[in-house]
Image (tube, rainbow, N blue to C red; front, side, top):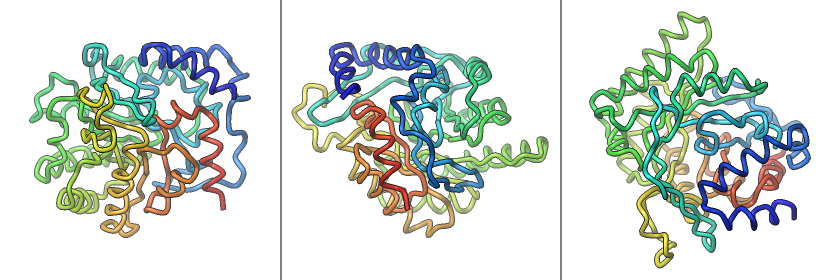
Length: 337
């Protein structure tokens, strides 16, 4: 009830303004924000990628791009937080407006474009927080970095975040940075994975700590591309695949006044496609690499469907905007036992 009232007020505002206000308001609540949360963990722990997660329901990248709100978000009962996408250098992202609600469809279109404060400032924010739970840091390339130099940006971010991240997620699937999804082609992905996995192994040798590396993929891959991603992930011994990012497809939202806006669609219309990609990946991977299911989760039954399709963990974002903290508790309950 409380969140429904807050949502009603927030949804009268521009979406990006509402996003920032909601997160700042949670921080202003201080310890009281825990009253909105899902409560303590009750035998929900899972070990994935060699990491002990207190529960399987996490926050997807994009909600807290700059790691400014870790303490407030952690108090809501997430089992892990993934921040970013962060790039080596700060960048403003795409021009506003760049975030659009499709309320009847419980969906969002965004073309944010990796707007962020840069990796150095993100790490300062992490250190200022008291959060010491499982932290994923999602990394990408700057918009003005040529695609043939993309690996340089991923390596720079990996070097920077390695000590502080519990795991690192490589984002090659946002539709909002020009040509970024070309990195999912077999040849380019092979080259990128060779570079980042070699650097991760070198960092592990130098620090004595092997941090897992996950790759976040698009829901818009065809069967041949899904097979190529699975093959290369196995070949390069990637630690996890995150399925999926947002979609450029507009099936199911045709006719909405924001349907023609450029950007990635998330929320309920994404659920079926992202879950099907997850299921196909699971068939290809056959348990050899853990999968993280994200895309269109708006209920506990949606979260359970992701696990049944092959995921070991799930992540929330758009559903959290529409349903609020209650979705965390509902999803956790659905995944117990």
